[in-house]
Length: 121
Image: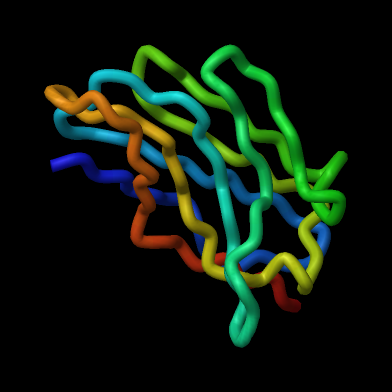
């Protein structure tokens, strides 16, 4: 069974930094785009950043210049470096991967369980 497991969340003061990591495991044939989404209490889940297999990236306007997404295709991992954090960045962050499981001809969208990030003094 394919699994995405996030790590690295926690409590940080405004202006601080955190690094989130996500590892995909299981019977995976190919991973296309990977990304990070977040959901604040009472709000919908929104895209934070995503990265293609070739390394092209795009970011939400609210995090552009502060967050950096990267991936390691050899390890099936994706990371999110978050700098200059603001209270409005507080949310549960979810890892996402558009992948093709081994033995399947179709791509599917897989999600991690989420990791909580709280920015507060």
